Image 1 (cartoon, rainbow, N blue to C red):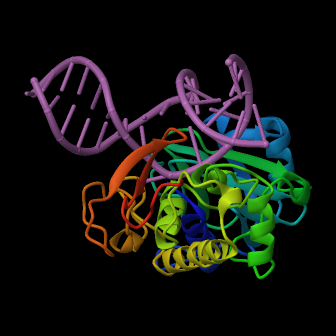
Image 2: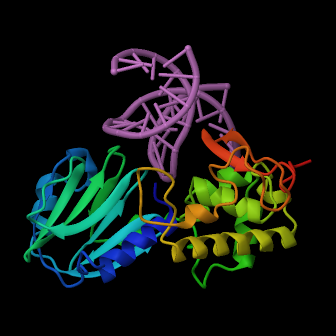
Image 3: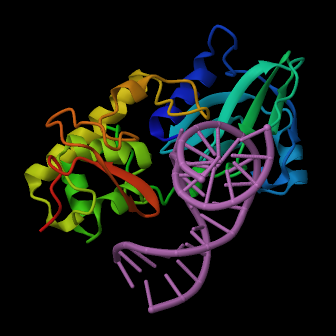
Length: 274
DNA sequence: ACGAGCGCCTGTCGGC
DNA sequence: TGCCGACAGGCGCTCG
């Protein structure tokens, strides 16, 4: 499910709350319930429980697709992978079938990590900088410039889709938003990174940021039953639209496999390399 | 260095 | 109705 816009939506939800849930900022953790042990990547369950008890939530951040719950002494890093979601609710609610980890606060609320496919992971670390060190630049950051992007692109010779999905090259893009950004930039997903003219690099840079910003404004995309938070699926141009007419040229959208992922593009607007 | 294949999991959907 | 395969917003690991 979640790519950068969806994770950002969860971050804002945790920070600001909504009509049914308060912000978790300032709450104190009473204890944790680890309902599926594989969820916790590190440390050990025993150390996790001992360390997290009594810590206050001091902030909620995000780096790429990683959700960062800042605690007084540690950071709790949550990766939702394919099917994870975060729920803040009263402790008296019945437990969801796929809850994998629960943080009980000292007030009437809890935070639940719901994760149907069990791919999601959680880390408790005192050194988040080190933990996140291998991630590529944050695409919506002011530090992410076209010049920097050109440099990273030119340092490799890879298909654009592979490149954009690689979190060490650029952080936060997944299968939906790579396809959307490439379509907006009129670039075929198999185009090599080191073959782009600087004009094309610039167009891709703008396209990535526009697509992500628009998706965030719409609370991300809700494609099927997994995630129902957002509206951006209404504005998608290629993803999940095989056979539908391209919004620019009416050609039917094609679907191919790249990196074992369905990849959607317009065969007319996004000409193959060579 | 790069890309392809597979595994990890649970659920939905469409075809027969 | 039931069964069976394809597929799903991710990523780590192998192997050529």
